Image (cartoon, rainbow, N blue to C red; front, top):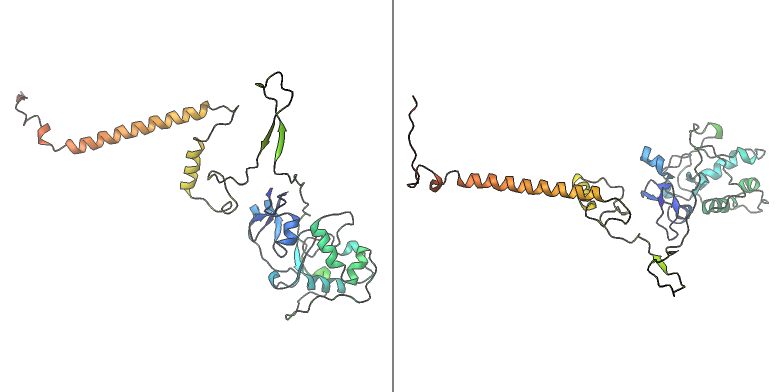
Length: 297
């Protein structure tokens, strides 16, 4: 779950596999009309995707596309051709998504940008207007002709195998306010003052602290050096009020002792190397020191 990048900054669990960002339904309609969008947990399980239409197996980026209420994307010409081959006596509930078998027509009480865009698209053809409960058109708006041949199976029931996927629903939306006003009682306020001060807390999304991941490199694999720097800088950040911080001080003291010990050992080793072959420090060459030759018996 994350926050989308559109100005509304909505909390969503939908994830664009192509651009690797969290997207809400407004983002799907405006900025990601042909992208493969599924839940973030599904992307964590398998990040591989194939940007093709499941009906004709051609790429989605070349022709006009439509996104169903289950967020699966197809060529509009393929959906229209599939709907025309279904008998007119078929109940609206029998029109389903070729991929997950969820209802093709969005419920009348569903209010969402994806559902509204889908209803506008379906309202342009007579076979879909009947399922939406709208009167038929005298002159039907036909989808644009394509240069390639659309390969759609004659039998809709045998077009694809049924995939075990569940319908994904949009999570709740947080408030769009970027500032939060909280009334805080000040213990040091004078007795004559009757007003309660207001403290405005600014949002943190513009922070440039390197300790936090930004959207640009959020999903990039990090090296061991970056993890070490993040761990090291975490000990020197300001300690929040009310949180136990004796553990952090103990770690700092231990690290300081280790550094001092390492420096002393290093200097001792370097000094031994420098004075190892110095004749001035040889006791046999010093006239003030007499060394007796002791004979072993």
